[in-house]
Structures are given as structure tokens and as C-alpha cells.
Length: 127
Image (cartoon, rainbow, N blue to C red; front, top):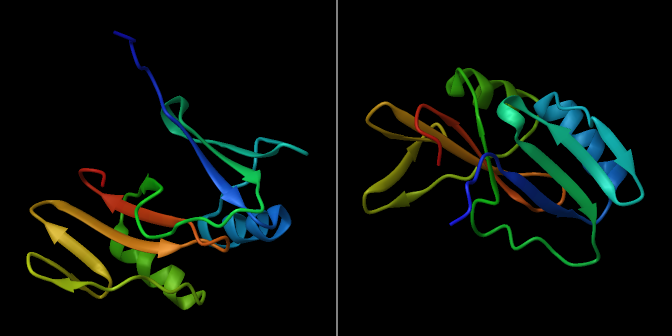
């Protein structure tokens, strides 16, 4: 069995410049590497998120990457003030309030990036 130490997530982008602007303006992320093959964002713990040019469409119907944050409510409110729309759910056993799902100490909220990728912001146990 392999010994897995970290994760790298790759996400499609129809327009890398648009995606680069969206990630900088909304998530405060700046690429640590950038070339024709895409953008690389290095995060804590050796994890990375890479955006690559693609003519395909992101499915956007499930979580494609999850980012841990310290204060989810503040992040959601700040992003909403910046025009970012969050998903709201009202399903049996899975309901959001102010776009935040809470289960015990864990909280999560879902949104789409400029390319249609589904992003989860979480506090506590990641989703």
C-alpha cells in the first residue's frame, strides 16, 4: 500500500486569467507557479490546488476541493458582500442556514468558482 502524505487537487479552467482573478479577489490566493500548463496554488501542509486550461466543463455538482478556514461565518459574509453566491440546501438531514451547514462543531458552505467548480469552505472537520 502507498504511504500518502499530501494531496494535490486539479481543477479545469475555461479561462485561466478569469480564474486567476477570481481566486485572488475572492479567496486571496495568488499562484506560486504559472505557465502554459496552468496555475499552482501552494497551501499549508504541502497541499496544492492546480488549475489547468480545459475546454471541458467542470461538473460543479459535487465538492471538487475543500478549503479549511478559521471563521466560516466571517468568510461567508465577506464573500457574499463581494458578490459571491453560495449554495443553499433544504434536504432531510441537510439544511443550510445563512448558507452554512452545521453538524456538531463542523461547519461548511459551498460555492462555485468562476469556472463552475464546486468549492467547499469548512471550519472544524473538513467536508
